[in-house]
Length: 400
Image (cartoon, rainbow, N blue to C red):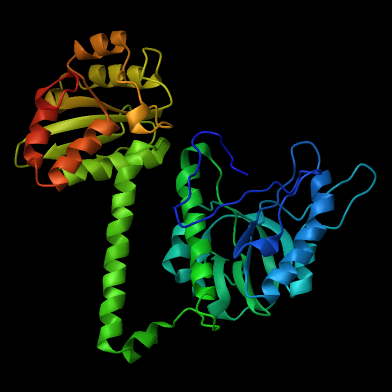
């Protein structure tokens, strides 16, 4: 299920993401076999697990058919192996159906997850950054090192595994965090992993992850293509992170704003949790400094926002310090759930604009910063001019 109505994860255009609720006792509208990659994420229901009791046998049977035909089934054990209940009886543990594919899990939980074997692939490593804990360990099969995806710290305890079965692959991975402020990025990493197994299946031959030494056997053309693909992937990833300022919230929004500021030539320092501001930045050549407070909201920034109180506290704390001349900037991603063309022009309430503007605080939106970055990227405006504008103005930002 989508965990949150807003922000809602929107998959890439070439991905058809279909969602179903295993705990829905009346409707489970599709078969695992209908899809190239299926992700099974089972955790205890809030009130009951009647739907699990009825639907899990169907998932098991459909998974068998899917694996026989070369599909991928990914399981993300969210809990210990509880037993789903119906109104009258208790069923088998929810992941016991994996034994039909020679995989046995044991209830356990912990942290310190580390990539291993095939998990050293970039997509898996990126995914594991969003898995703070595991809930089960794999006790069968005795996996070959290259089939491991994740282990506990430096031990041999396996919490992630890819297991070939018939023509397909059964994948076990620790579950994603579903915290709201990380939800969109976490979902994108999950889709990246799913895409990885889909693209492997399209080769139509059982090719595993290439060992490190294989590069020494490739022709120069293949090496050049690999290098170009890696460079383009890194470049694309950076552009996607920059664009996140248009729809993001939370810590990931702060990080994307930091990357955007670096594009303007600023040296950005991330501040520790609990600080009154999120970022500080300096431009050495121009000899000017900034403090940035970042926020994302579905509405506009009003006087009761905790960001206003933090900004006010920062102004008081820096009095008499070398930072007193740094420009304090509030950067807000307002109405983040809307297409920019559908957003209201007002992003800060009038009393916020008057209060902070009179104290020489600059009020900016992430959309404004992104539009200014586009001008720099397209060679239409020097980035130093934008930095000067940000430092020399206060109140509502009105780019020239």
